[in-house]
Image 1 (cartoon, rainbow, N blue to C red):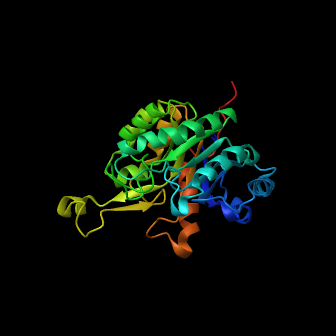
Image 2 (cartoon, rainbow, N blue to C red):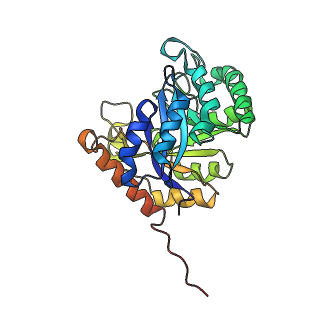
Image 3 (cartoon, one colour):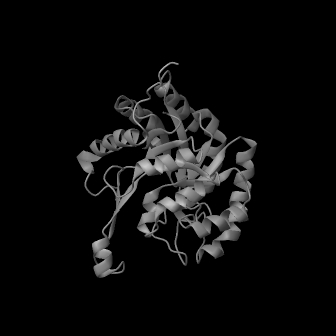
Length: 296
């Protein structure tokens, strides 16, 4: 049943302290994340401590990532590109072959960001290929549109086509989740069915959304009323049984790592209550415990 593992995201800075506390809940994978920079982190020492924490258990480190803007290198993003390079080099030490984050973007439209994307990730793809590492881009818009934004161009399927044409490498793909598509009122199911068949979905974030269609119909999406909320799986609109079935039919054998800390209800002291509910819910959607067939 663990051909698709169910795990969660943890902050890279204190992952070695947090992971041992989460293991008893039954998480099967952990993805480590850094915000904008890995500067000051001894990645190889961290990798050693993290691997010691999971040693002897059927648990994997599914990915390591940095989330910033590597294309501009401006302000707090000055170290983001170098952090991508460090993580690519250190991935093997963590026991993973996947590094993830935002693509970044330049001022102006997604089209205007593509030349710089091709320049930066063309080189990073070569670095990754030489080390047997893959690069995955989260599909979060971070408040951006096609015309403008400060973080990421990988939030729209048309952009994905342009990105993969600009850097035609088997080592780059997507870190996909339904939530970010639903926020844009995109139905994630037909999109998933199409893109899993391309082999470009390298990792899945376990995050859902609730769309208030009554608000959309009455007030639209540009009024003062909220019309969509990020949700922990099990509390949103997505049918994760369908999602996992489509992933399996498409040959996906990675992990679904829960991205918490967004749910408007299961937050604060209820954060881990929500995450463990999501963990058990996703395991049920996966089919529950393995049951062997009768012997002939």
